[in-house]
Image (cartoon, rainbow, N blue to C red):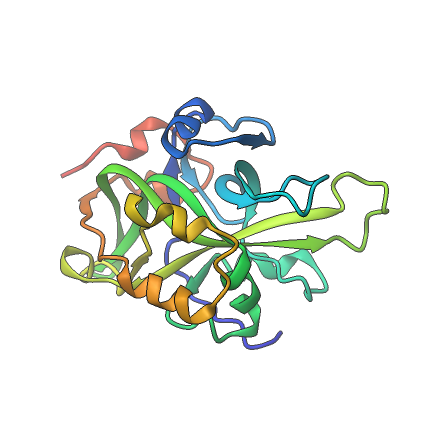
Length: 243
């Protein structure tokens, strides 16, 4: 594998917003893929909803439109020989995405937002890992990068021959988050949403300036049940505080 930055951090999150809700929040022009049910324990390699801007498929020269699209969580670079690498690229360090070949092209042209109610982190305490749910008063707009990978095992006529995938960007954690984990997702504020999604903004220096302008998130952590440790568990009870 090339010099991919691999960092396991935001490995589970909750996403319960309906497509109707997401279209209203993000002013979506085009919806692609079937609606997903509410998910309280989203895990890597699962299908997730993302927001991105892209020209219509049949009109590549047309202006980009804002899409709500289903993708696979775990970035699969275009040069990858198989899909397995995606499970190791669920996160990318925001500090180096404009330098690493694995992320550089996506940072310039394929930025997106992964909506979430909040995400889970595990604190090491007395020899065990205690899960927390971190959230805000508003929907979290986690900054992401997406890629398209041609599956060599599928024919040119197969509609599933192109796999869309995403990675979530992380940055050093601060304030109340630092005692749980030293990284946190990059949360795009509404004021920078349009600029972050704009595929016409391709200058990598400007991308890093934009990332530097994103403020540290103000998130509230609370302890949740260890039931979240298993991806088999996916129900509203996982979001209930304990202790």
